[in-house]
Image 1 (cartoon, rainbow, N blue to C red):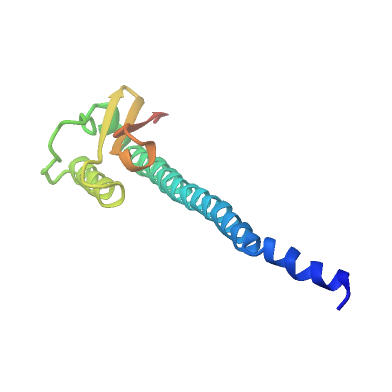
Image 2: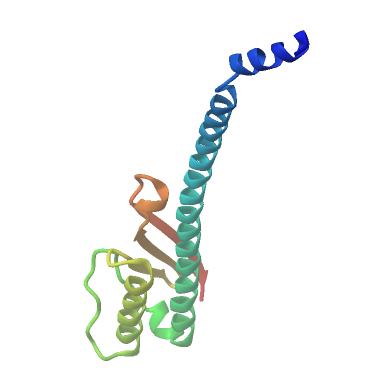
Length: 151
């Protein structure tokens, strides 16, 4: 054998295992990257849910505003007024039925803690939708959407 042939096995012998270390480092870097992507995906899902809930709150404010416009006289006289802490109306009037249905829709779409408020001063009405958005906001439990409408 030539001298050149003897050096190849000894060089190969000294580098044994280097490929495994490189693979392990690459797997570690890839794992950290995938964990970052998983965290990003979780945050994205939370924010999308929160955006959906805000969109539902906007639709619900338009729904009650449209009902109040349908019965403008009673709305401007304060028959649609309800506070956040008030119990759902139980009467048989149009205003009571609409408010009870509105609040039921809020709870069905935004969670059991969701509620709504209507406060009219003549034809200018404030509509508030409040719900629990703790999952998306990482701690801020109550979210409120306030809408002012002119009947």
